[in-house]
Image (tube, rainbow, N blue to C red; front, side):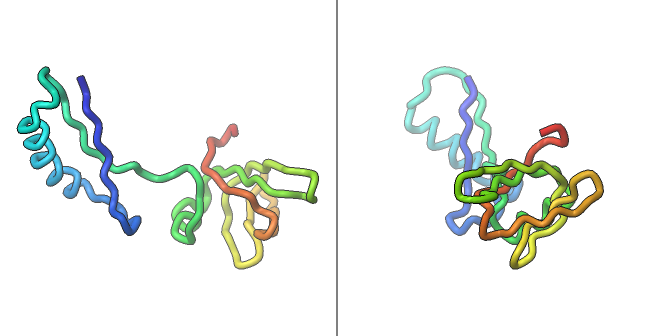
Length: 120
């Protein structure tokens, strides 16, 4: 049996490997003391990692050059999914490198930006 526990900071800050390690012993002791589990188990402590959806300026800086899919409205009745390499996010646009050409998508029209694979 594997028990997986994810920890995160309430303020959204990154969780370090040392923080995961320091949480392991008290968590293991609490499980043993409670006797909730009466068989052998492996305890895994981790953090949730990066979300595939890019939201913050930090996300956009960190994943510059990575393949992303931008979902946006071309007009009120037409939702478009565009795949390319993230070039940058300015105040007005998401800039995508699509086969060497920079495409600018107005931020006001963007519904979401997510990490993807080079093939989609």
